[in-house]
Amino acid sequence: MVEPAGLFVVCIGLYVAYVARAIAARVGTGVEGRGSSGADVAMVRLVGGAIAVYGGYVLLTG
Image 1 (tube, helix red, strand yellow):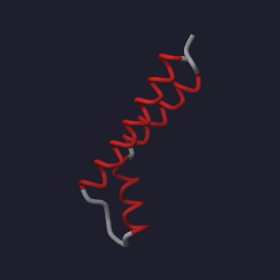
Image 2 (tube, rainbow, N blue to C red):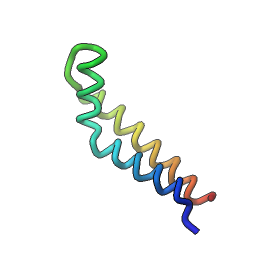
Image 3 (cartoon, rainbow, N blue to C red):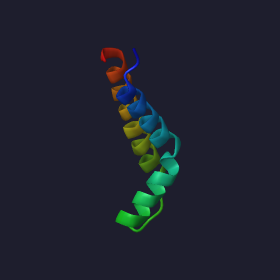
């Protein structure tokens, strides 16, 4: 049976990775007073990927 919480976490992680440029721009301008750089976008995508991987783990282990 598919664990609904794991599926939800996977979706959240993929969404974060998909909108990484917008998230990095918002965080960059709010915290440091500048726009997003490539490293900021990569960091947000890495976090989104980690969230998705954790969700996959929850899906597999139940």
